[in-house]
Image (cartoon, rainbow, N blue to C red; front, side, top):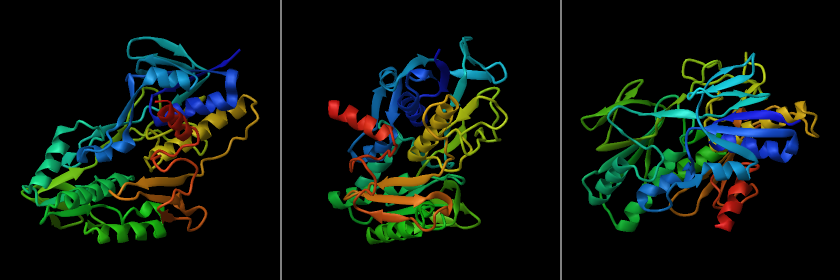
Length: 374
């Protein structure tokens, strides 16, 4: 008899976990995926949409789930009883499970008061308006920023570099761009070597970077920042603030994020795992989410007696920085666990195509096959 694995969510971590379970455990598991949306949005491409390039791609989630070896249900898991191993949807359906994977992601909230929030979708009219005003010259100084506590600032640098490229192509003169970030140095999360290369790149392109400050609000042409001071701007694009999506019965911190151990097991809830942005792991990035999902899938498969060893999470950060010219490929071992492994170059140091912005063991080849078939 197959073991019932219930996945709450339909994003990157959910799909990676479904594929991994299918590949590792095969017929030993019966995977069901519950998510409120009918589509999966491939968001990494969205940074180029305001400049008229690739929009965020959309896929039918039911079709993706089937290809991943899971059965899709359009419903939201609202609460869980870990002791009884039962989940309940908002519509009142009760689902029995043997293992539960919480991969429901985050809620995106407005980032900075007074700023325009970049939500990562192709048809965001306010973002398009700001870019149009920058081209037309009514916005002379555009700032890009992120709320305090954000751990994934790479889209800021892409938005700024793509804006600079657009201005150069259009021959727009007199505009200036500035990145305002709580980081100690540009994309320091990758490590010293990558951060220095990104810093050199933005300087070469004439993009100013103000580091070590947290934006508070934007009004009257100024961004108020902490610990003190202001940064001048005519308009501000901000990344959103994140909160974990709460499920009743699942432990979470005050911001809604789920605490897990190194194997993705939810602390204080038996037979419950979590992966992706909903976890309390500080880095919210698609590639890290796939690594978390792989760890969870292997832990479940090992418990079922499959020929796989459960290994703790040992995250490696891989990112593709779109620059308006050749992409810059960045790597770094999170938390410095293996010394200085940071790198930046124009050739990806991992397997996969040069256009892959989401680097995951299973999802990268999975989407490559979809693209080739299309």
